[in-house]
Image 1 (cartoon, helix red, strand yellow):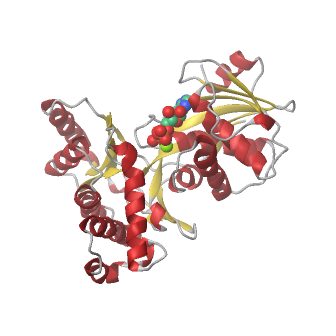
Image 2 (image 1 turned 180 degrees about the vertical axis):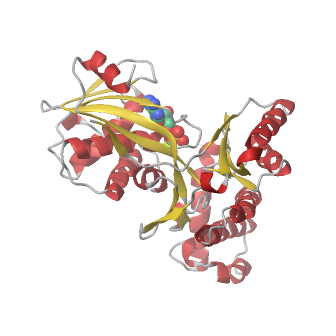
Length: 384
Ligand code: ADP
Ligand code: MG
C-alpha cells in the first residue's frame, strides 16, 4: 500500500498532500559545522515520505508506519519543549509544529500526519532531519506560509535543538531541504551561504558507496560534546571567534602556539578539513571527480588520528575499499559507528562491496549495509 493509502486507512480520508524529504551523507567537512566552517552534503534517494492533512481544531495526530505504538494525539497549542512525549519519535514532527508556532505561524493549528521512511535510523544518514524537514515542508505548503527552504531547515534544527534537546548543527536539515539532483551542496555554516556543486557520478561512470556499519559505540555519546568543547578551547587560545578563522595558510603557526597536544590535534583536524572542502570543490568544478578520492582518504586519516572519532569497523571499511581499487574513502558523520563513503569506479562497485563484506565477516563484525549514494533532490511535493 502507498503512503497515501495507509493515511486514508488510518484517518478515514485522503491526505491533502504527500511530501518527501531525504536523508544525506556528508561528502567532506566533518566536525566543522560548530566551528563556523564548511560542509558538503548530498541528499540520498532514501527519504521520509509523509501524507499530511490540515486540521483546524487544534489537534495534532502523528503516526509512523516504521515504529510500534499507534497514533500519537497531541494539542498544537500545548506543546512543551523537552517534555517527554509518549512516543519519543513524535517529538521530531511535534517540535516542528512547536517551532513554527513559536515564530508566529499560529495559523498552523494542527495536522494529521502519517509517515514512512526509507532512511535507516541511527546510521548517521540523518533520518531525524528527514523527519523534521518533511514535516516543515508539508506544513509550509499546506498552510501557505511562504517560507524558504533554508528557513525550513532552520526551523527543523530549532525543533531538534530546543524541542527534542539534541545539539545538532544546521547541516543535516539544510541538506534535506536544499540539495538538488546531481549535486553536492557547499554550505558555509557561518553566513549560511550555499552553492550547488556539480557531482554527477553516473555521467563519469563512478559510484559513491555508503557502508552502513550498523554499529554505534557507546564511546560516541560524550565525544561530540568533548570535541566541541575542545575546539572552543582551541579558538579561545588562538584568539579567534571560531576555528574557521585560523585559515589553512596559518595552520602551522597556530599549532606552534598551542601547548596542549589534544587541542592541537583538534585544531589541525578542523582547519585542514575546511581546507579539504575547498580542495574538493576545486576538483569538482574542474570536472575531476576521481581527483577527490585521495582528499576523502586524507580526511579519514584526520578524523581517525587527530580527532579520534573513528572505530575499527569504519577503519576496516575504508582500508578494505582502498585496498581493492577505490579512489578514496572516509567515515562520514559523527563517527564511532554509523557510515563510511567509498568513491569507486562503477565497474568495481560489486568487487569492492564483496571485499568489504568479506573483511567484516573475517573480523567477526556484523554484516554492513552497502548501497550507492545517488545525489538526489531535496524536499519535494510528491502528490497531488
Ligand atoms: P540519525 O538522524 O542519524 O538517523 P538520530 O538519532 O538523530 O539518528 O535520529 C533517529 C531518531 O529519529 C529515531 O530514534 C526516531 O526517534 C526518529 N526517526 C527517524 N526515522 C523515523 C521513522 N521512520 N519513524 C519514526 N521515527 C523516526
Ligand atoms: Mg539525526
